[in-house]
Image (cartoon, rainbow, N blue to C red; front, top):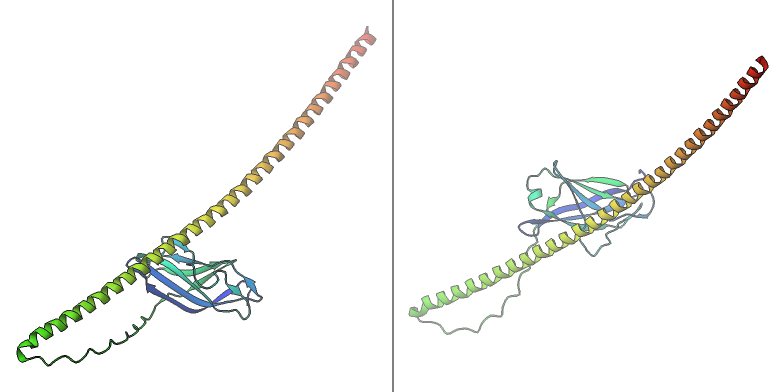
Length: 241
């Protein structure tokens, strides 16, 4: 096994969380030569035109996975725009401490069977209606059934809207956390560049000062040589006279 962590995918599935949002659920194990705590993985979505980075949604598991020779299972969920996944050309990957791991395409999650409702207690036996009242009984029974179906549909719609709102709020919070992390990284990079520029300016100032001192010394030496030459010329003229 290489020094970088490797991710062993056990489950990667998608489930609709609303008309505009898809929930991506991922489970697996992080293999490594030694035990180490990794940074919270970021899900990368690349459609060939743009690369998106999505932070994991808050959940019961620790967002920072534990890697090692025999690691525990790690689970995470991510929220993504449904429109991005419709064309089927999106590539998936995970990015964490010193590693980018390619992922397979997520599978459509199997729909869970609805839990059967507890049957209502049987009503007391009604008096046997006469032939003329059969149609009225059927209409009443039909009305009750329609009311029950309408109430069940309203509950399903309310639950779907609540799940979509929750997923949207989690996505917004994840995007805000990612933006804050990117801003901190950019600030740190600018500080490093600023410190390097200051050190470079100080070095150039020292070099310029050394150059000026050297030229001043050369000028003084030239003036001394010129003065000695003038004195030698004057002495030679006196001897000739």
